[in-house]
Length: 121
Image (cartoon, rainbow, N blue to C red; front, side, top):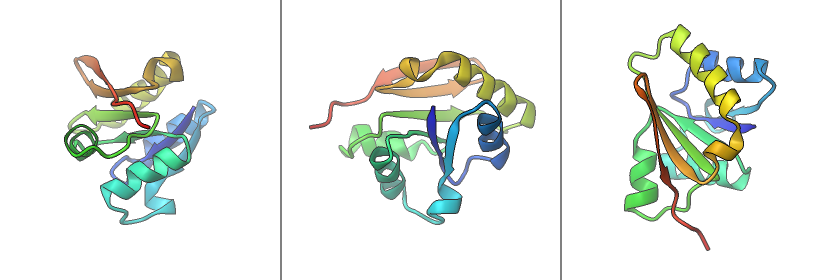
């Protein structure tokens, strides 16, 4: 899968996804300090799944009408312990892109829930 990790995502998660064979671009490396709309646009332009601890992406997409990327994964893991990140990386790899594409997925230690992303024209 092709991922864009937001600046707030620990490098350990990006590394874990890479170790599982995923293509990971880190916003903190390629676009340090980018505002949330820019991060969404980057994920969209590169056809990547955005992964973030920032819930503002949901407000931008659902509340303000910003065009979404192919998928967004919002992590609600507080604090983000290394063992949780490893487990999460493996769970995402097992799910596959088909289970995430077209959804805003909220992940917590209690499970996940998904909401379809709005259609774009």
